[in-house]
Amino acid sequence: MARDFLRVVSAIAAAAKNKRAVVVMLGGHIVKTGLSPLLIELMDRRVITHLAMNGSAAIHDYEIARFGATSEDVARGLVDGTFGMAEETGRGMNEAFTAGMKNGWGMGEALARALEGIPLSNGDLSVLLAAHRLGIPCTVHAAIGAEIIHQHPAANGAAIGDTSHRDFRRLAASLPALHEGGVVLNLGSAVIMPEVFLKTLTIARNLNGGKPTGFTTCDLDMQRHYRPRVNVVQRPTQGSGKGYEITGHHEIMVPLLVWGIVEALES
Image (cartoon, rainbow, N blue to C red):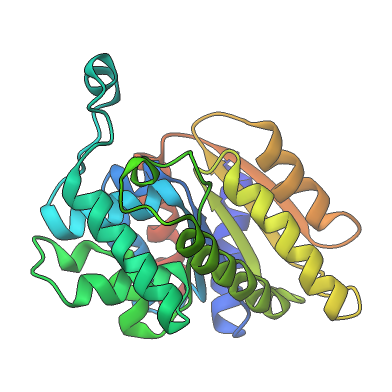
């Protein structure tokens, strides 16, 4: 695994130096465990060219930025039906989606614009805000019914679908820049982002004569899952490119990964 880890670091550093795409996909645990500053460091260095996340990552990012902590306590809240019922989170995010639908924004952009306009506890920790500030595409890929904000009375299925679908197209538009040297990282998403990536890659190849090819993929997670292995590591690199699986706790592996990338770039 150490050799594979170093190969992934080298691939990302080479992509950054050669101006190829580095697409990073997130699950919620990455944000919840406080790793956002490391991703922001890579965005500040213009290593990450597109940040894509599932709905739970966006919720954690929004809550940490706005309130300083996440509201989630599943075990305790499920007993009495209070799990996911935070008024401020549900209303704020759903109102952002409605504004996004009216203004033609994607879900990620709508959330960043909403955060810009309100007092924040930890705005400097938000990957949504950092990407918006730097002009880096940041997309959110919702799964209706799988996220706590869909329980809220302000939830608007049309707005959720419209803004997230716009982000789906935006991710597809970023993938051609992977061709011959780009990198895709899947950090901690077991289902949503691997499925979204497979479909957006299909769109990109359909519109670009079978390209992109010749890129590197890596799934980094605490345990192995079927979809990341097949939809990120194996199928997209079949016939060209290379896919890697790295297993380890996010709180250890992501700092090591970023440290390695920064060292490779500076050397």
